[in-house]
Amino acid sequence: MPLTAILLVLGAAILHATWNIASKKAQGGVMFMFLTCLINTVFWLPFLWWYGMAPALDWGVLGWTMCLVSSVLHLLYFYFLMFAYRQADLTVVYPVARGLGPVITAVFAVVVFAEPLTVSLGAGLLGVAAGVFLIAGGPSLLRAAQEQARRDRVMKGVRYGALVGCFIASYTLVDAYAVKWLLLSPILLDYLANVARLPIISVLAWPKRSEFKAECKRNFKYAFIVATISPVGYVMVLYAMQLAPMSRVAPARELSMLFAAIVGGHLLGEEDRMLRILGAGAIALGVLVLCW
Image (cartoon, rainbow, N blue to C red; front, side):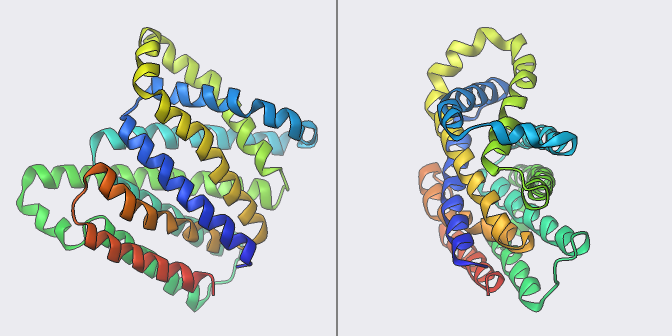
């Protein structure tokens, strides 16, 4: 991958892990999603006004369709991510979701978009998969079978993480097509997709409108972190996809595991830190092979 793409992915990985830790601490639901989407829309509007939205007028039917599809997929992704974080540990959900998503994306890129299947790609994906397994608990996942309550919680995390991973792969493929082949602006695509989500989330949050003030008091700082950091990180990924093959960029995003393993475990009081650091090292090695 070009150096610029690598640097973009590195920065995005740190930002992605940061806002996921904030989301986990928030333990939010639909009202948290509404608050996050609202802050995103308001906070970034002045920048978009300066940046200019004129290019979006030339997107055509296909471009706007991709934007709307992306909006719905991101909404479903965030909804199930929040649900998963309320049901299971971040150190299970996050690795499974982040590990499965890029693997699906990379395979799809090779099969559908005819990107080359190389030895380095296969080895890199294996490294990422091994790292994900270690961070998720490794051998302890097997030992957990002896403890029913722990096993049930771990398996919930695996199932929900896998579901979230499918949505990650879906929106990554849609957005990659939009910015790489339709040449849509990554900044406009991300912002306008968020704006399109706001009416949908508003309808979902309306029955719980009485909880809005309490949600602001409890989770405003976390919603602000997600709303301001998440778009920056994802736009960086979209720009990287314009510079490098999608089958390389998608797995390379898993460098966020390094940050999550070192910082997330400490902040959330997670166990098995050494195992997660070993897993993060395996992911880093896999990424280096992918970037070769």
